[in-house]
Length: 279
Length: 279
Image 1 (cartoon, each protein chain N blue to C red):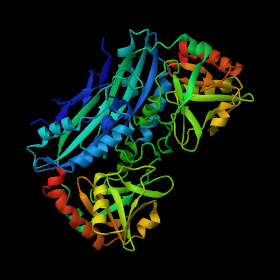
Image 2: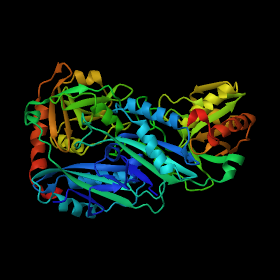
Image 3: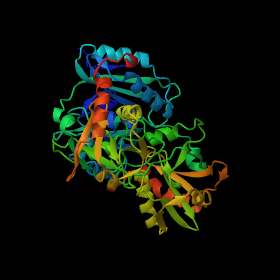
Image 4: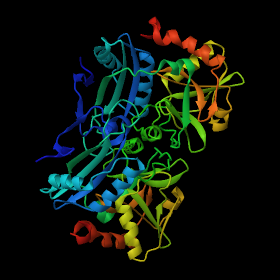
């Protein structure tokens, strides 16, 4: 069973001159595979195309990606699909060759066995010391230059703390190292503004949409650490885990509230059951 | 003749799961090779070690790197040596394995044939639209997350404009896409403060040192575009080109001044002639 394709060809190697390696010049998507199918495919492709446009990439053939993804995932009950898009390196240096083609890397990984209690009983999170730099030009997109997340994730080793929250240099809480953040205050759902930094997650987008379906008022706004620590409910989400309630931030405890439970219930069928409109 | 070594073994490929590719988790050096010898080796290694410390890397064996560099460069009159240091990927995700070893990529490229008049008559530069985000935690080090430079360099194609200047979001001029910046105002040498963003170049360090030897007053300070456009002299520098005077920024012309010439003259033997203290 192949585990990775580079431009459609089974391979575990890439060219040493790859621009993704040299310059972080590229984009990625991390996709949950359930019963052989990459979930929320269209949404992941929409974000990828948006990022490609922001980086002035030539057209990305998402049908080709889909056939490659299906090739790798078809026989997998549960897996993680990672797609990396980068550009051909025609010469040394930052400049991109005018004829530089897209390079597609599609790889399939084992599903990480998160403890079930993370979703059921919530998780403990910490506050990272490493901060996110601001750059509106790159904010939101899922590009390969992720050194800040690497540094933040290296701050702790405790396996019972699955996530850490990252602030920007103005003291606003932006996201987790690999998840987006929501809080509930006075029955209002809030999620950090991502116009200056952070990644606009697929699961975050879905939570925002489903909140509207449930008539839950939502605001995307700059959130201080005080806002978060004083919240009635806190949860994080990403494409692999869905929603995880937060029951503790450093030494402060939180209950799993009604709004978090309602959103989790609403999301479950979209994430785990076949949906005709999102194949 | 081998052109690249991965962990000491001739290769043109790296593992598809390389953390430099996935996360920009790594550092690099671009070094001028003259008469078979990588120039300013000790300085490049000092910066690499400093970056490795900032990123919590295990010890980097610079003697091993030197022997690999010499293997690739020994028969080259002129070449560009690129060294990339990254970490082993033990599993998917930002988290670094506790046993993750260093991966060394050493590659030799042809010397770029810059027109001689760039150094002699100066160059035209442009002002890039792409800005540098601020992150004091990563400022100064030469890490692999360089998407901002890629975007800035993709703004123009004209071959007679070899460089573009980049500003931060506060409007300060920081550096060129692949060079550092100096200006001269009222006989004072100024170079942008790099505490918030930018790369602290080896040639910049050398210019600063040689300015002191020449009793030239120097200040590292935030510089506005107005400061730069109103300067008496402007020059850029990097490890491959040494100093290039700037004779034009967008439509504004500049003369090549005395201070620029004095520094170029002072640097020449250090860059191009064998120096016992810097082998």
